[in-house]
Image (cartoon, rainbow, N blue to C red; front, side, top):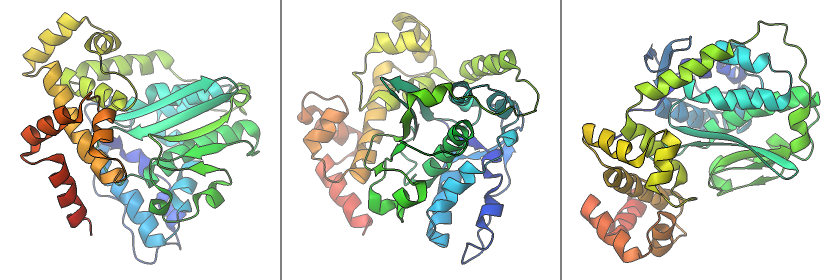
Length: 339
């Protein structure tokens, strides 16, 4: 249903310097990248997102230093991101820089929900990989939030006050004292990874970068091009994965968000050999497996509710059709293989 998610190989820039002297064994950066036809902006190479995530997990396991991905993000050279880095660096305010990074992030990494939101006197940037097959995925989030933190610190001139973090992972899975590394309160077991900060920081001026101005029209055009190149089934699946635990999955609403009528969406899905219900069912089942792996404390009924089923018996029947066994049996088998 979904092609392999990718990330620009530029995400690896600077890690070797952070790793110098830290790794107990040699940690090679992931291998040769392939051309990335779906992402037009230079640099034009990509690697599987799952491979980058595994690399970040391996780094922390081998170095026993949970700070490495955070430091790689905080010290990351945004110029490595080409025109997108130029857009961020040439922004005059923290909020503008964060908005540009969020708006153009799809040109850097697939299958990711990244948002900048403001509520009352707090603002937040949240980051979550939508592919439920990519897990564990704890420390790539530390890297991405490190880049966000870098932008905020540029605006505050290094001041770090009233900042809060949330992570998808449980505290013990992060392999270290995250709060001590970040010098900020942290919560765990959240639905997404997030950095929250006073909304007034959005208006802080950024020091001039001295670099070129961004070609915003070009970047906006590349976002449009990317969306056109992405099969409708994949675009729909990403919206469903994004909303499963937080919104009612409504066909009309999702069609409007994608930019078409429900009738047109149904027709185009049929042309791709699929349907709205088929995509929804597949997403629900894959998300169910993710929930079994990451939320062992939830009952089958609670997971069914999170997936949008009014009755857990409907979920049980659907899962049995999909996997050939019941959710209870699948969860028990998963528990055996993880020990």
